[in-house]
Image (cartoon, rainbow, N blue to C red):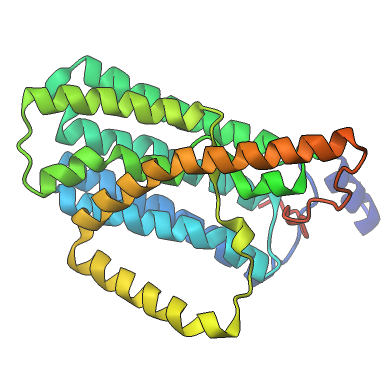
Length: 290
């Protein structure tokens, strides 16, 4: 029996798979393509780690982290956010920042403490998955105060991956892979996993906004150029110093969060709760089924 176009549309909409578009705008594809490229770079980095080329492996993980940082911004800029893209991004995060760094660290050093090293990297990978699941749930929570969106709950997965690989950076810089160093790295990996699933507030930098004062444009550009040159010339030393600064920032971030939380609770008790909506969550413009 021949079906009319309206009947075909009704069947498509009631099939439980969502609407299907005959032609998908190209702007919806670019962010997902960047996400797929990030997964490819991350998995290729794991391949080089298994072959013993740790320097190249770390470089590829950094490229994957860069691509992960721009795919969401690209989607918002192109107005191409979708549930499909969000799920792809979560998959890329668990692969690039949970699985790949764990394999890198185990292949480089923690294999000397087996099975304890393997248990440590398993715990880290699972912790990253739990942290990402919690992030997805909390992003849909409308009960949070607007200012709380400026903080991550626990160490975000990309930062956790950078921290986890500190023993690898030190190995490239010349630290010998001794059994003692491997034991210390195993304990350190467990500590990073705990930070990942903790409820410590970590400042996200979202409060900086999308605009900067006119007088600050040149200093910011100069600072970015200097950082890029230092990172290029002294990659692993820069990563070690940056990791130390990141760890040192956690107590400061926690203190600032608690101060703001106390002040917000006092205003709430006085009936002066902030009423503005949390507009940091980007609305989903289109939903597609590929």
